[in-house]
Amino acid sequence: MARPRVGQGVVVHVPATTANIGPGFDCLGAALELDNVFELRCIEGDGHRFDLIIEGSEGAHLRGGPDNLIYRSAQRVWKEADEAPMGLEARVRLAVPPARGLGSSATAIVAGLIGANALVGEPLSKEKLLELAIDIEGHPDNVVPSLVGGLCMTARAASHRWRVVRCEWSTQVMAVVAIPALRLTTSEARRALPKAIPVGDAVMNLGALTLLLQGLRTGNGDLITDGMHDRLHEPYRWGLIVGGTKVRDAAIEAGAWGCVISGAGPSLLALCRPDLAEGVAKAMVLAWHRAGVESRAELLTVQQDGSRWQQLPSGIDSGQQI
Image (cartoon, rainbow, N blue to C red; front, side, top):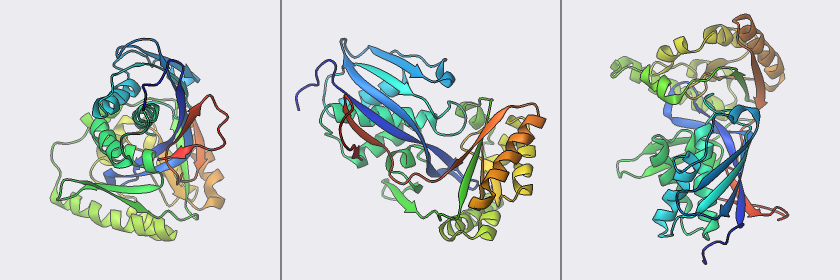
């Protein structure tokens, strides 16, 4: 394909994600029906020019420049495709708030990869984009469902390949995500983790994960309740989230099967029957308000299609899915 001209662009829709979901530390994640939208255009300049325009109140602290995560991801694609880097502008309609445990950084990585690949004629396969995304992020639990959608279990096999298993999520399981007016970076949350864990805790997590996946597949609330327990990361992170345990307890009292930290936090994920979701959401927001933290709650279903793109200017009837 010829080098894209100045002004040529694509729009990329990338879903939010919730990761870990209790015992699935660094390997389990689900895409949610909440998208960031990235309009990427080629502009004058070399491989050091990246202009960023944020639409939304949450991203005022985000900056452009060559170190931006979107642009660094784009550069990885062009390097792999043996394409010279180019100047890029990104206009982002931000619906996934940064540093809240909903995969905001994963949306930036995925948008940069998909957008850069589309601009040069998609020389890289979906599998290669997946490999690059995991390498950039450092773990697969957010970027994989952002790319492919659904509930995904991802593991590095003995062959050293990344293997992705799409798991079922029953329509009888609603996700309630409570998002506080707090920020917690992934690096800060990871610093709270111990260097080693007891074997018994690892065994407990393996069993809980099995129960959780079966419960999500069948909609069995008892299995979900027993499966949403973790000993690898949550015990060390609850103390970083003001009012977090009170919000968790309020969700369960309102009928949720369980409530866990979404990703690295501070957002919390509760799972419940659809008819109880509004009550669970109100209880979580109220509990955080009583703890002195304002928040909002979203009732979200699992997004099954993953990221998609289409050419700019808009007007194309349908986009391309990766």
